Length: 125
Image 1: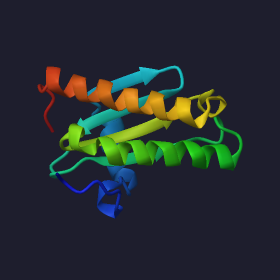
Image 2: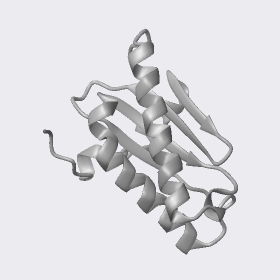
Image 3: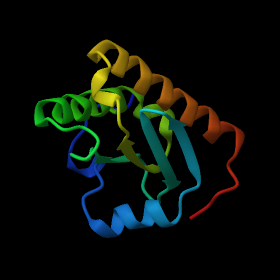
Image 4: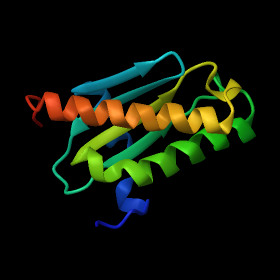
């Protein structure tokens, strides 16, 4: 089983990497509380970028909890995601959910993204 870590090479780090996902989105998973945008990459592992805006989640403690939940669920689900660059965007109301509800919602979103990957492999770099 591949290593289930979330080290630096599993993160989107540059504005260029984020722009590539925003500009060339192939897969979307939408929910009233979140949006996942994804596109294939040339690497052998998925990478994650987080956009948790103060505009949508006012308090830093709540923004940090959302990011922690997303990183942990990504770490556990990364084997299902092939070689993708994924950007997680929070939407208003995400902070109103309990940590357990947030975890279930994000895990369900990773499963939905994985199913979309299996159905539609037509989007290439």
